[in-house]
Image (tube, rainbow, N blue to C red):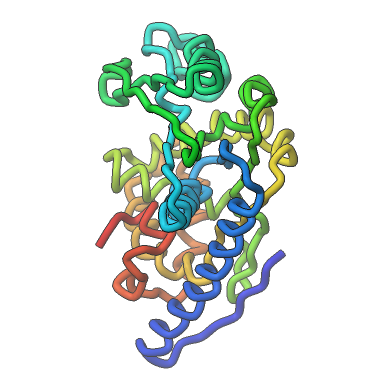
Length: 301
């Protein structure tokens, strides 16, 4: 468990603390990116559970590879989702399964990987989450300097990871690795990612906290079944927790959680989480750098 005990006498102390944490994390990202490049792999499989910082890590790798003259292509495995009508329902009249391999057009993904190897050209579908349908394709051409990043929680699924066995590839797994005790208040790893997700879903998808908590049940079920058991297939593991983050997200998570009413099935969890945050000091998002990992969840400034 990670222990954090901090107090702030003024706004300057808060700003300084954020920048110190960011500097430390930035050096950590540089090290991760360097290890990826040193591997010499031309296929990168980037995975991790929901709200684990995959996008930020991918962007850092892209920037560093580009600076070194590489041509980087990014493939989101989510774009291989079947149209809604073709996705298996997990519980009758309830949830649509977006987590298992059955949710993907596996034949399309398999062809994409085969064409990448044999033709050095491959087509990637584009999926519209609003209509929940495929809306077209984009074709990529490979050259000797091309590196391809396949990004998504599904990258560690054995069926998918195995597609790349003939390639010089490397797997990266990012997550919140530890529970945290902040000024005597315990936050589990799940609490941290759930808070990120609730705020992100409201910010970018207009979702209520009730809906995010509803989805969280199946999300965690899939993580325990399909993601965590396979994470060690990845050579590189990254912890995405930022020491200041709970102080920054406090304002936003409390605001969203207050809409969970007593009659809600999730009122107990929402109240428990909200009370934890109420006990913490608050730090303004204004102090967070524009290129921080945390903009994944709170948006660009």
